[in-house]
Image (tube, rainbow, N blue to C red):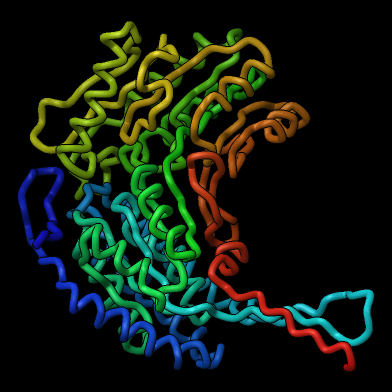
Length: 458
């Protein structure tokens, strides 16, 4: 039987382990989740609103305590960890504030006699499979709308953040969520497949790797279970020759290095018009070099360790492979001399399609710069990726920005800004970045039954 383990990535110290549950215990969780759904789906919106509001309050009240677990388990710098907790509070509050609006009946304008109404109703127990890079946020954007809707949740978190996983369940229980509405599950991959295949489970949402998404989609497809997948990204960051280069370079460094570069929507490919390429690269390197790796518990640290030793090794392998094939190291290019899963801010140039870093996601503080000539070249290069999550365009010409935005094969485009997130903005991608949307009304409706009620004689 496997374990879930808290390992401090800044020191390599194993702090605490938790055993996986048995198959019988998993079946008990599904039974409890289904039983809770039967009552939770009929609970008043006022009650649901109160629970969500209290969950937001607890996150604000215990911000420092909850943030400390993120720093311990995956190395998130203290200030960024506090920011994640605050974001989570805003998500729970958003759905508390909008649940009545999102649940309201929609009266259709029809050609025939009578009435036609679309009602928004829950569908049943859901399974969530979440990653380690934003342990609270990733869960909240799935859990909050579905709790508001009336669904119930069984949550399998990442193996390296078990204490964060338990803290989520504890907060929601304290907020007044009835037993069985949200259940943490320390389960194996095979048990995940068993849960998805169980006819009582009505949907599954995964945020994670392309490989994990394909495995979940396969099981879900065989069992006709609805799924939402948020997978990897290799987001382009396009800089035109009329852009404010100081602003763009500062934004580029922040986008690439926040959370140690471990974000699906972090900019990873920096496409720069040739006339300003050298100047932008110089400014980008200068900005990135100022992000010195340090102790994640310090409030001054901006760049902490990667989530694990294996994550640092994998990134180093990708970078070293590119360099061995002729890529130019413009900054960094390897591990630090400190103990722990640290990696220097790294920028590569001269990357060509034959290198792995051209097409694979760099999940760490390393990015790639490319020059381009025309807008058409920029779009072609940006779209030459298996991924299509988010993107950024920096220019002083809004018409050009809109032209590029219309041509990018991504789920999100940000103009003169890095990719960000907010409760009222839909989040998701296309191509091998997955399908479905989270947050805003879009996330609320992913696992909803949009029931038509037609009365021709009304």
